[in-house]
Length: 508
View (spheres, one colour):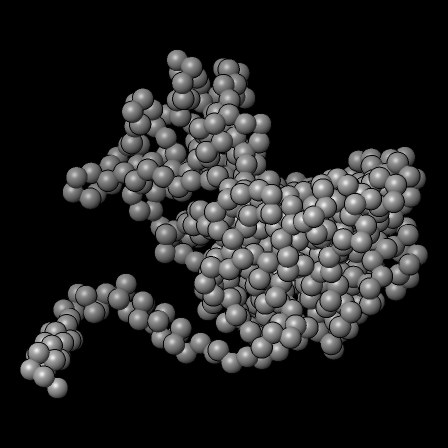
């Protein structure tokens, strides 16, 4: 070794020694010790390949990274903390990555194309569910012979039990992605001649023993338009068919439920359950107790589904969707979107508490993001749904909201586009929700409590509905073969992770 190499080696030893004795206010800091503990957990993480008897795929519809951040803060603040240090249940999973969400014909995707990627292993156009990308949207004849096989179908064919849980309509794009094949996502209760509508495909699903558990909304799509349901809403079907009756006829061993009481009364030995808890989508988590007939929470439905599915000795595949996160964002209501994200996190924890992670893979991801932002320079612990209160020059919180260049306060969270731009005039309702117009510019939020459920955040660009966003979404994994989730992945790789874990793929 030459003198220069020896000199460099000695310098590195001295340097390492100099940093070995850190001051106690550094090495004893909670930030320092907690980071060390987290690193040690990662070092101890098991990377042994082992088969997954069970797979649970959680999809937070519209749950982008900014949504996760804001929901984690809101959850922590609702629990009495500052919020920023909090974690949602799945954010502590040992493995994570990112998924690229674009459709084959759109930079910013829709849920039909993204769920197809996750459930079939290939990407396709926006608006199309489990039909290959060479088919035009809405082309019923052209879709024949271009249907894709889903992970749920493969699990069913392997002898596993299968289930779908959602807070949206069971026929909506994401849950439909588990079982349906249509060239148009809106064919929920009727389709052109030669094609089956989505509700019909759910009820007539005949691979293996059929879908064992289906919980969600969308009752109207299974009932004829001459029928009024238990909550006073009419059915949508024009063909006169009552698919709930057909399901019960086809599955005499099954249990059909429509309300909280029926859900609570599901027998402990039930092996097949169909629950339709609302005419359209189920309630937002914050509004659930106002439902006419009563409906279970996402966590309760998830736990019940696992109870039923675990009776199959061959294992199970379960898809769970937090469907109304997306709807809250489209409406420009951060409160609705974030509280539904918290409810989604509780459902993930319910699953973790129910299964054996030695033989179960749990994946948590989103289908796409939203144009939802966290901005300004609010002081730590500032209410995430509140107005921005920043720090002074010494780093201490100010006593009043920070004004923008127009001398009006603004909120930490907002939207790039959507309803929040609209000048709704000075009606009492508009004043209560948005504040009064000021010189046709932004609304004056001084006297408005922006943390209330009814407040809809401001938006830069006026649109009738806030839109999806195109950036990557996170993937979180725990359990058998969870280490396969890492790095930046194409969204369709999620399918391959699941089928590989279930022993249905030849990838080694």
